[in-house]
Amino acid sequence: MATYSKGYKKQNQQLLLIKVIVGIIVTVGLLMLAALVFDKATDWKDYNSYSHAKTYDEVWAMNDEDGNPVSNYAVYFYSNTCPTCRDIKEDVLGFANDYNKDSERFFLADINSITTKEVAEDETAYTKQNFLTEIGEESISTPMIVVVTDNQLEEVVLGKINIEEFLEALEQGTYEPFND
Image 1: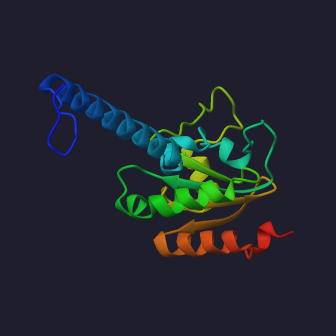
Image 2 (image 1 turned 180 degrees about the vertical axis):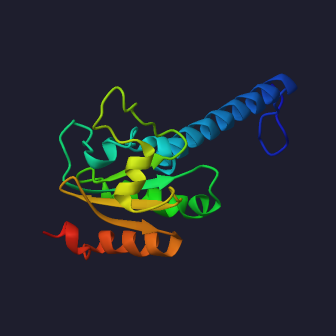
């Protein structure tokens, strides 16, 4: 192989092309790895990463991931089509991610997928209307948080500002019903 006057070896075109191709492959591999790590690190930003109430009955008797009943908890009602829900989604899910680290006490309910048992099947089951009567509302508004203590309604929190204040109180440990 020939050398330049300063002593560097000349590279032929094929060797240079191979180095460029290997460099591109390594770069693409590193980018894919970074994307995978980012995706795993941001799982908390997806509603599906959290436990959901699937029926109106479940709102009054939520269980943690091990199936144990939870006595004091909150259920956040949202809709993917709600502009306010989209505005506070990252804040709510960031709170849920941090708050549920020790024990699961913050649950979600998608108003578009929550179902109701048929009354004919179980006369004690909550229909949507029974649920609305129980919480004292005419309709399910989003965003909304239903706070439950000892399987009883404690409070209904409506609206962006009230929800943000409620989450802050929970985060700081100043929400009285949960401090008993």
